[in-house]
Amino acid sequence: MPTSNLPTDPNAAPPSDQHMSQEAVAQYIREEQQNRRGGFTPRPVFVQKLNEFGSPNLAVLTFDQDTQLTVAGLLKVAPDDHVIVYDDNAPGGAQYVHGTVAEVRDAHRPSDCVPGMRLIYINKINSADEQTAETTAR
Image (cartoon, rainbow, N blue to C red; front, side, top):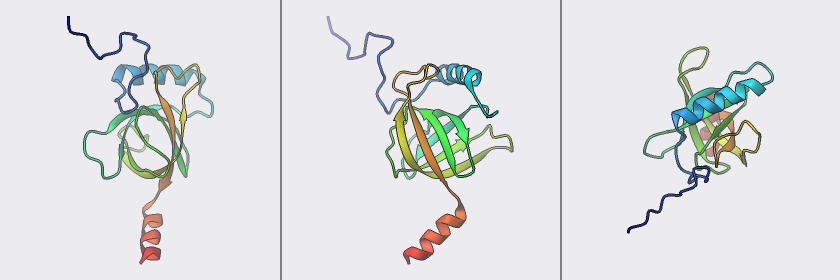
């Protein structure tokens, strides 16, 4: 009989570049809202590495500050990678944020219910910062 390369353990960690399911995102948001401080409501977002083809990865925006975002997901990124975060559910309407990955940590809290999930800290880059960097590089 042929054997499958798929893991038989339903709790086995998925490959780090696998997309989160909509169900996993919804469950994470429900769990995270119960433990959330500061009034921020987690919401689903799509994250994609800059200049990378393919579909963006579904993830959860867990915190949004003036200069940094925190995203929980399975996206395979490393510090200094440039990413785009598409936030269709932002309070002020759909928006996207360009940023640089500052840090990636394994998720260990009880609410981190998705095996292999990581917390991704993204420093926001606004258009004025990009223009200054381009001018300086010339």
